[in-house]
Amino acid sequence: MPKVHITTDNLTLDVKDGYALIDMCEEHDTSILFGCRDGACGACMVKVIKGAESISPIQDDEKDFLETMAAEPNERLACQCKVYGDVTLEVSE
Image (tube, rainbow, N blue to C red):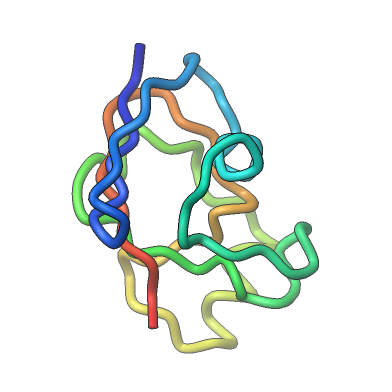
């Protein structure tokens, strides 16, 4: 089972392969916040500290939004990510 570690919360969770981060956060108390839930607001932006290859590939809409927000290369929208292996995240400021 993949493990998701959220450094901001000092929390590590086991998740099913292909599990959506948004679903994980709905089931567990994390500091990752969600607004629109469809990649249009940026409330759920996280930094991928380790394991970027273990998250679903970035899609065009998310890429466009992140470019507009001048996001760092390791930032992603949690609402758009599925987990396929171990990953370490922190909440972006």
